[in-house]
Length: 333
Ligand SMILES: NC(=O)c1ccc[n+]([C@@H]2O[C@H](COP(=O)([O-])OP(=O)(O)OC[C@H]3O[C@@H](n4cnc5c(N)ncnc54)[C@H](OP(=O)(O)O)[C@@H]3O)[C@@H](O)[C@H]2O)c1
Image 1: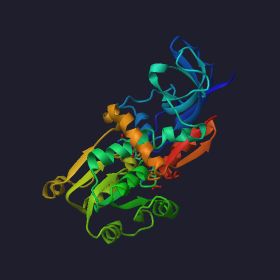
Image 2: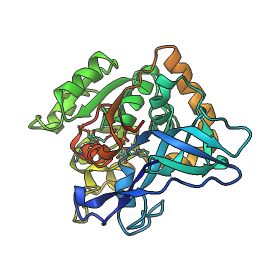
Image 3: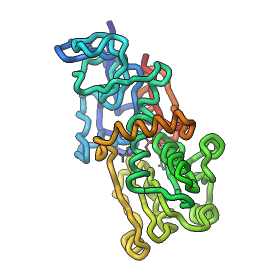
Image 4: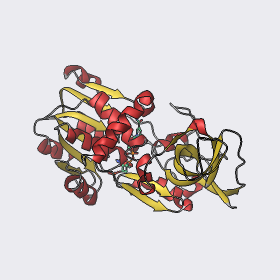
């Protein structure tokens, strides 16, 4: 049987290109005691992977040049050397970008959803839904009537974060790069208003018009100039959830922005960064709550799915061009 794998061919300098990746044929994996062989169904492509393509270690180890890229995968067990897993079971884990791999069952979690709902295990019930949940609930702590601004609003994290804020009675303003995305946010997800950061001449003015009472919570997915502008309009006792800085991930220069300390001081603001894994012990509880909200129709999930293993680089690079609405996934089998 054929088995394909993507490796990191070279570290990108600036934008990621096709030269960053190389697809190669590898042999089918062997299977040891306690392992399952997994046929990859869906692969998640995520902005944090850009950081792992750099040489320096951050909160996570860098990818190794010449070795497989890896990330969150949902797959089907095709062979098992663990009595508690049978062929046909679905599992979630951190696995290589590979069609078939073997993995110890201690490193996977069982996915108990119907086959058609498998993408949800990588979106709203996966890492990005959990990120939205913990960022909003632990740092944002939304209260009825507050104004919430979300950048990267139409993406995997942003769509869920905005809906959680709506659930708590907030006024939610989303920022994205397109009218199609903003239409989706307002008409499908119930965001109160939106701003297109690419077409607006004056983001500061648009924000002040759409947030006449100032901003109580800013869920920052993008950083850079968008965030600098938003920071100026934060209220007393407001909270800034520093979730991601995607606008800076490809930059070749050091990013220098506002001096924010005086603002934080004089407005008694809270600004906190976080990594979703900080809350690992609370994942099951959060997943239950998210699943409940989905079943009650209070939260909608959306995935942008590209078919074909060979399209992994295209799907990944698309994140930096805003090609996705909701969670970007690649369907392999
Ligand atoms: N802290 C954590 O534990 C954690 C966990 C997961 C994700 N994150 C971070 O959260 C953010 C969102 O992640 P996600 O998985 O939900 O990705 P995503 O929002 O689904 O996809 C990325 C989106 O970022 C926007 N974008 C790309 N380049 C941009 C730029 N130069 N300026 C402004 N916007 C840009 C695009 O939307 P537009 O079309 O609207 O520009 C794109 O669709 C990322 O920064 C990610 O690193 C953090």
